Image (cartoon, rainbow, N blue to C red; front, side, top):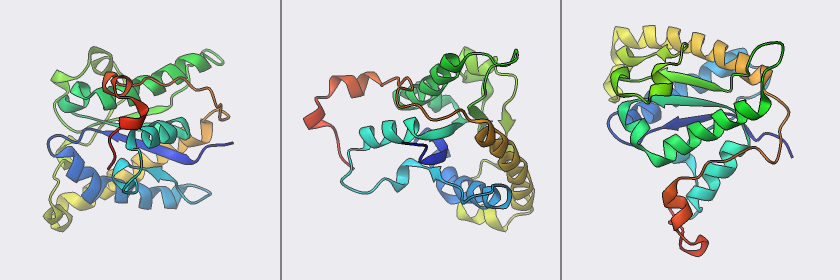
Length: 195
């Protein structure tokens, strides 16, 4: 077994983030990764899960088989059990790996979508977080503004930095730690919701 994805995009479905990811972020990230990776980029985003799939299981499997996590932070992100489980799972993976040559591995690429004042204290203490809040317009018309050109330029830098994380990702392990949301643990397997 090996990694199936280079990047797992973790984001809240509340507020403007979901449509921003769908209309702008995921496409620009993938295009920019095409320009900097030696292989075709493999990006997981949950709205591409096929209908009828047990989505909680697919989320877990995709996270386990992703080299890094791109966490798009907004206040609802830290109120979502699912987002927190994704973020915590990757943080646990970093802890398992420990330090090498005095440096802890970086497997999480945080992006600030909005309002850092209402983030989890650990997120507020994070020293590197790419601020894309000025580009947080979810409507299609954003593509026709001068800010979109600036957003594309910023996404090229984001892709270069994410490519560095992908390049430094450790060998895949079947036993990476997984944090499951309370809602997932309470639902019997046979009754898990389907898309």
